[in-house]
Length: 544
Image 1 (cartoon, rainbow, N blue to C red):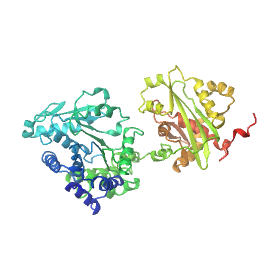
Image 2 (cartoon, one colour):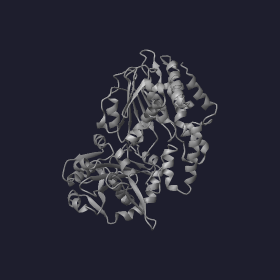
Image 3 (tube, one colour):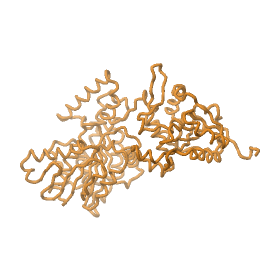
Image 4 (cartoon, rainbow, N blue to C red):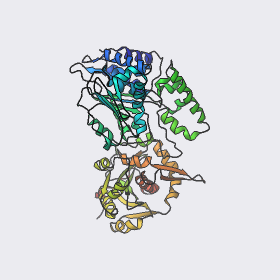
């Protein structure tokens, strides 16, 4: 059993009801009490912890209980080799919650003689230079404001050096190619909600391990990029908190409201922003007043609700008047396919442009559920020209798409896929819109397929919209684990026309493709005419 006064104090504040915690932080405390604090092979370095807190409060600001709580685990070590227990920290909370302030103080402390590790270099990484310089500038200005610190640290506009430890702090943009090659002791990734993949982290983390006690900090609020780096980190964090991966060296500190309804009660806002816990400091009082004003303005400016929920409550909320489904409902499509062998299906095809994407798929009805098995073809020349913000190569490796190096996507790819699927399933009819269908009609009919034309695809959108919304809301759609289909669906913009009818358009004409969703819609339009629930066919019943 290990103890630390700052950890014990924070847990006591929660257990005594003095502060409100969200689900993830409650899970964190349970996880720590059950799996970490009971160990006898690790220890808190109380001297280092106290030195850091004194350093931060002398040169920066008084630390809140949650900041002291996090800091204690930064200096948790293995007894065997005195190596850090937690190598990585995920710190997510609402805007203004004190993430950058804590990072500024930690960064400065790491390059100081109080930390005592020689050449413990710091890289601060963000999506743009302005954000990357936030903590760097705070440390710079702190040194500039105190003569004693000015004697201990050399500063310039691009780096800060501890004279005693020769440790260097620099800032970088998240352009993976701009890394200068520091032998880092610590890397801080800011605004991680903007990271589309792991490229930046892979580059900067590669310099770690050459000095003792390497650490990485991932900080930010939630954002709008789905299936990217942040979603993977949140999934990893939940595996830790649920006790599924006890060997993961990540400390996940996630603050958010638990339910959208909690936004209406300011008493719950401390779940997203721990600075709002009582007693509030002067800074927190001013921030709370500002957030309260913004909240009251939502009545006259409802279009800002999505931004307010994401940045102030750390709970992204989709405007369902403009999107097909919430992200949670889209994620609910991630369920394994039931047994589809020898089951009747209807094919769907979207082939809007022969120069970028083409999507094919099969729709099955199983009870109340619709299972959509799909594949896409993507032209390499398009990918070389338009840099999509998604892991296309990874999706190809997983088998969700095929990249073809051709002037246009060859019709045979589509035909061959449907022929291959017919050998496994009861496929006879394929549904598509008339646009470009002349290119594939002859080839598909030559293979014996029956084609159904949708002469006005946008007209069926308004007919299907209530049904599609209901299917997603009730989790009656199955995509299996298909991030490409989730991406397609999340890219759909629901346009409400003056007559009240809905159309499914793209949120971005060039980078937010919807082909797989449109193919799904085409097949769904004819599904009930073709599919009979639980109707199987058997090869033995067919006379050849």
